[in-house]
Image (cartoon, rainbow, N blue to C red):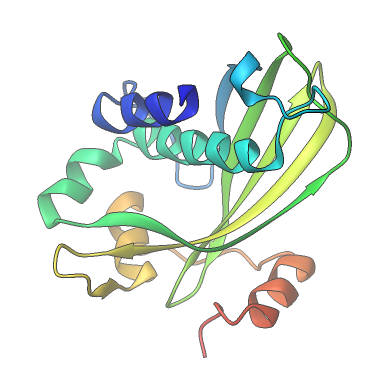
Length: 175
């Protein structure tokens, strides 16, 4: 419940935009493990990582000053696919960073990497393929969203091979 409330706050009362923040610049969200985040083994539940990633993506949009731009057009983000790999556990009370960054895009989706670190040590890495929809439920081309958020035409960096392979495997990559 705490993460749902945190996401609601991050979305409806976003933090201020960071002047000069670029589309490919990382966005850092600092979090703490709460009691409700834990499973029976006393470490963060795998599903909670995904909720934390939602918060991180909302903060990335906020850092870019995207909420007003998207709202003016009636566009909103959704997850098309995601995957995560865990390296170590997070436990009650630990403070950690979640770094979210755009890796690239194609005609259909924007690819993001979200990494969890504890005192500089790698904890987990998530990869997300995100889409944008309009009020009518129609898909918005990722290139249109990128052009809006980048303030003009932009060329996608080449995706890391593991991300490109995953995108093809889960059928989210542009055809």
